Length: 314
Ligand code: ASP
Image (cartoon, rainbow, N blue to C red):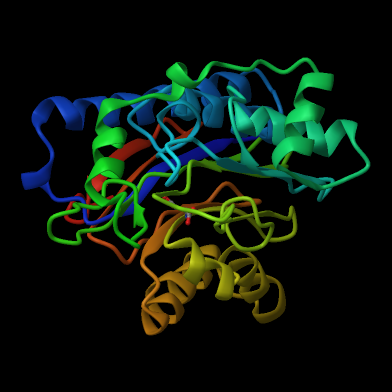
């Protein structure tokens, strides 16, 4: 049986003119590394869940993406990370929000799914659980990136919050969250998403990423979805579950369902961003309504793709 994986590293106003060749290479390499980490597991007959987690960890460990190590700063100059993982076979899910110093929030999400009575833990309690599960912690310096500190410094005194890579000078928006969706040789699918959220965010703000059905969802009957974009809109549009519902109740294909949600519904609401999704046949779609999205896929039929800009055709 065939298998496939797709990942994203965020969406938004990503123009060639804004990225140096070196930066572009960092993003492309990061996406490739994430795809390969998941693919290696799928190739050996491993589960979609393991592959999604491995790909997500790779993105969390790569500072150019706004997840794990590269997470953006909150108003107080800290990091509060959100993550979620969902298994389409069992329909079990685990999610975590507002955690600090946890090296790989997606591992914590999975551990909540597998080792607790609960689905969604937050803040101190989630960190306590991570300690109990012997998950790895890292000091503040590990999450400290100069670029993100500059992003915060530029708007800290204002009331604004900005999404990752948003150009503080002209209001350009990019969203740097990471995500992965996989289909394994057993016919199962899974999704994982992880983010640092928004620069200068306050009040324990929670985005769409850890909310099951908004930023992340997986159901073997339909699809596995991981989103990136302006979380407040994605929560209200219940984006990931909406794609699944259009397939389940209306019989639409993955591609058509995702297109309607991202390019019609979200656009009408002014919700900027995109998603990666896979169905139980291994079909992949990666629609976005922003200028660009860091994205890529690899399939067992030998096909693969990595793209950033809008004009990079599949
Ligand atoms: N969706 C994320 C959030 O709102 C941001 C992103 O995709 O970069 O927290």
